[in-house]
Length: 219
Image (tube, rainbow, N blue to C red; front, side, top):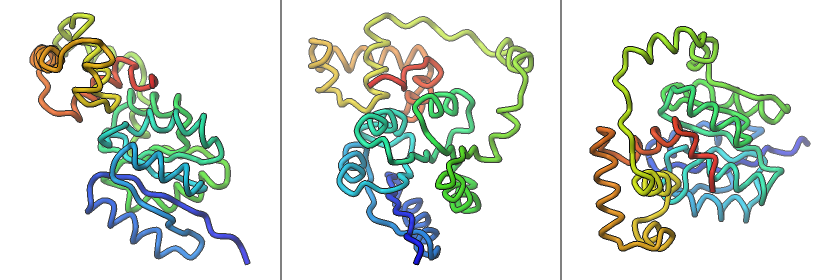
């Protein structure tokens, strides 16, 4: 009898987690061996269970999915990582592939593509969501034309950048303060100033900005 493919699911949205669980449990050749809802929990789960495939959300609290993929490349190199995301963005895709991710799935089409992606990855392939096809094929000239119409991004101070980077990588305010050897209130101030300059309001937007800066490959 053919051995089942062992999978872990890591996502902080209960509805998404439940939907993916149902998809996997309905496949005879797949076996769900555990779920997690944050980066730290995901890392422990994957190290403990050693699945064949780990499906992880890019924007998890505690540790983003790309940083997690880089950790797993060192600590559990036999685990194939598939990332799940809301972001249909070439910057995110590049960061994910650079981190060794084997599949990039967009959440809005995950129900249709998860099983196909899983089989592709197990067979040794690399899977990119069809929703990304146009972006992957898009020429640099078109990207430059689009970028030229956008307002320039304001400059951040070195400290503001450091705080946003650590936030995107999943560090709490206290952890960031300790790493930078500054007070918690100072960290909050730097973060607020940076977010105001960039016109962003949520952690997901911080992660998106971090991806465009190439920060998500750092641990």
